[in-house]
Length: 172
Image (cartoon, rainbow, N blue to C red; front, side, top):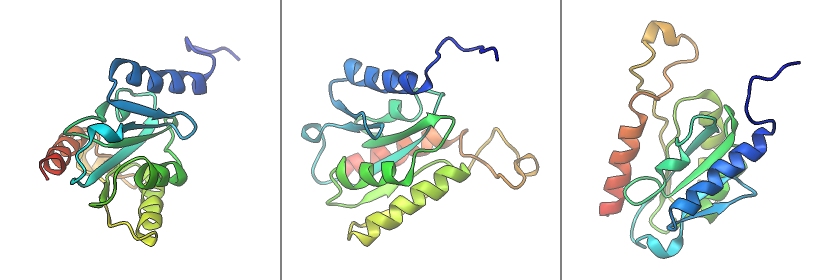
């Protein structure tokens, strides 16, 4: 079987891409085992709602590239074009961000993301963390007819929504 890729190990590719973000932005940290990029605790206001998103890898800089002041507090990465697990998202929301003021878990409307991020939100709520879940599903790239059963993915307007909620959270 022939390959048309420059990289033979997709796991190494994802790990390298995520790690590179911390090299270029010292305010970020990388949980290598769980593929989570998050803001270092010392750079985050204590009095803000944490914003957690993420999704499959392969189309960087989304979503790990959106971690920073006025945007996301953490991003969980799946493998190439696959959703992160519910456990990865749970760790991001419960262990990698300051969730004292609560956490907003806000993925795109991809089926795997909705399921896994939704389960993580339920686990965070069960642990007593004030948690809200919202799947972004407004997408100008896929019409209602063409979206069919899969539905709109949230790709077209997602970054704007993440920026708005991130800025609002940062403002307190």
